[in-house]
Image (cartoon, rainbow, N blue to C red; front, side):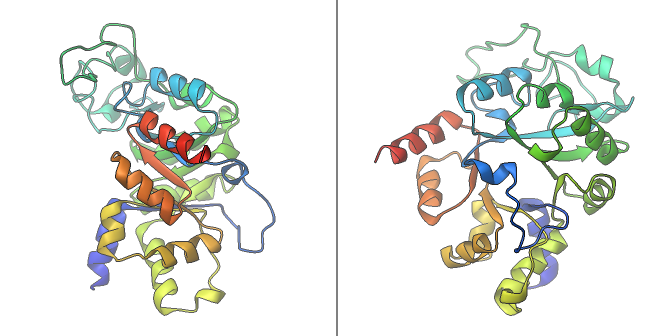
Length: 293
């Protein structure tokens, strides 16, 4: 296996998350370990509600007090941080254009639920109901106890603007920051070492290299969570034993985006810490079933 191929795939398909300065001897328990985060909502549960909106996250907060809420952020042209996945607004709204080139006022004028349908286009239940693109701070202030996984996408000073929004919401200990470009993570860690951050692909490659070929007993985790897709697990032949070894080091293991019930059950049998899904109702039902066994 060539490491260049490994890094490329890992950067595209996986991220892991760190708490600065935390090692295996740390006795502190983070909010991500106090309660289960098995139920993870990808973009707020995008198959059930308009993705990355207040509607979705309010529904999640009301239904599942222990859910891990995943979302994506961009910086606007005027320095605000908004919650949207794509670089453009075309797929989810009635507008067109790059999110980072628009002001908050321009983005807020769009219908963020315009294209949402849960029945293959027969109905658009939230269209025209005033659902707007939210700011990160608005989402974080929905709940004082929920945990958030935030992927920084793009925009001028995205790391600094995201850190500021998290601090203003008083949510620093409940957030994990992720990003594909390593520079965003480096900037976030320099600005806010108290906020958990995401491995870049090189650091994740180092983890797996140490696990398989290095001195794993002496390895000190740099990060708090490793997130993988099923295809990445298969591609690099990660075994249940290796996943268990990673978890034994105090690293939380999460999988995304899991929408098939058989995959949910398999991962629960293997042993993971969080499953990110577009179908939270389905995963919640499986978890309830397991709890009643």
